[in-house]
Length: 401
Ligand SMILES: Cc1cc2nc3c(=O)[nH]c(=O)nc-3n(C[C@H](O)[C@H](O)[C@H](O)COP(=O)(O)OP(=O)(O)OC[C@H]3O[C@@H](n4cnc5c(N)ncnc54)[C@H](O)[C@@H]3O)c2cc1C
Image (spheres, rainbow, N blue to C red):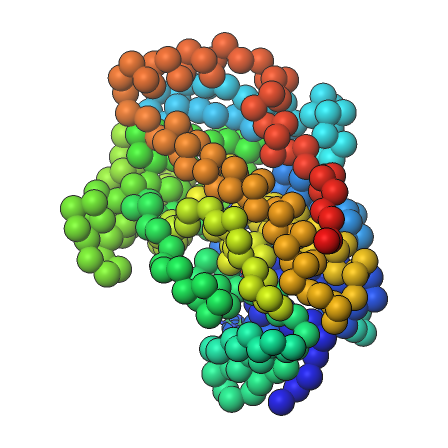
């Protein structure tokens, strides 16, 4: 059995960011990842100022920015009429308000920067091909066993193993994630293959009944990212197993879109789809020497583009707490402080993400008409709706008692 002080299960955005944060504060960390390599699948990711703040704490923001695109505006369009509903200015007034920019990038670029930074730290050990299958929370230690028979004894374990977290299951066994009936298709295309009228300076969200399409450039503007999301009628009609949200439904759902929407959908990769799940918030995701982080703790629907941002905020708070307190003394009290700081906020983001999904996906009728009127009346520099989630700087004192 291998002995380690801090074991991180899962080497996604959250697990690697936490490991880097701990290593740069002098802690030894061992990361196990079930995949054969540390890679991100999927396409683009939007990173709001609260994510930038957390990446800045890790000292990698400048490197990350070298791959990023800095859009001028977030623009919400009606996918059927082609009318602009509202926009948010991401330029000077935004930067002045939040101190950090809003940027978009390819997920694999983000993970690659985190991975390289971890690899450069002598006190991070990265082990792919290790799937944690058993977590035993013993009084003075924790033992994690992997599918290949290897096992680790650790002072503390952090489950950063995503939506279907095995660590969460081992310590809480609180059931399966909840299916939203929505499914996402996502992918990138070379920018040269995209109609220039798509507007490369902005993040564009085409909203519609039970569907939306998000488009923005990534990788310094070389690729165009698209995410198409829709509610599957086949799922609602009792579609069993994996037989729902298939490409024929994708085409059908976006058939009434504008030319730009339909041409975007025609260019969408169809090899893989992502059914959308979340969970209801919980206020306790710690047991003794084991805690959770990111999607393992608070998986959410992606409508606020905040899942990774919340995972990164978690890492900033937890890394600071673990750096300030000896983990061998009373890890449970450190984890309680972390949870007390993070759980109320992530619960709010999880809950609001669902509300925003409903708001985006309204059908024609009085509710949609009043939503459209409200959106069209707001100014592009009205940030009042986003202050609470963009303006977080881990500023509430997380006290270890
Ligand atoms: C369509 C879509 C769009 C999104 N857009 C955005 C956005 O624009 N902005 C944003 O902030 N967020 C966005 N998100 C959310 C974001 O992708 C996630 O919240 C984020 O990736 C969570 O990171 P994580 O490290 O917690 O989990 P994950 O990224 O899921 O990483 C978990 C890791 O653990 C590994 N693992 C799992 N089980 C085990 C095991 N038993 N043993 C060892 N390793 C294991 C996995 O292989 C994986 O590498 C989006 C999500 C979706 C689905």
